[in-house]
Image (cartoon, rainbow, N blue to C red; front, side):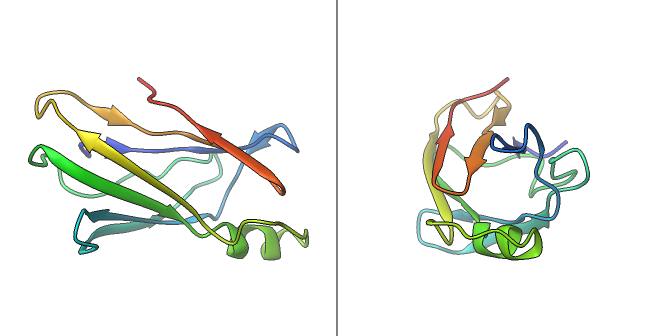
Length: 108
């Protein structure tokens, strides 16, 4: 299983957001993995099974998602920077999305 996983929920529609492109990169912007959310809003395999402690970034291409669903949006991408402190722990970073707002949290 990937050390970092994510899922995206379309809060405005009350269902998973399918087809959202996602990039995982390190603090220097070096891409480590790319993926796209499935019908359940999850990326099945996003990157390495193990990462070193440090700073990482997830970038969600929300413009592509909203264009595919024929809706206008305010944020063309959502960038989440986070610190991976415990190399033994799994990191799950969900995104709750709507056309004009978003939120995130450390999931389980």
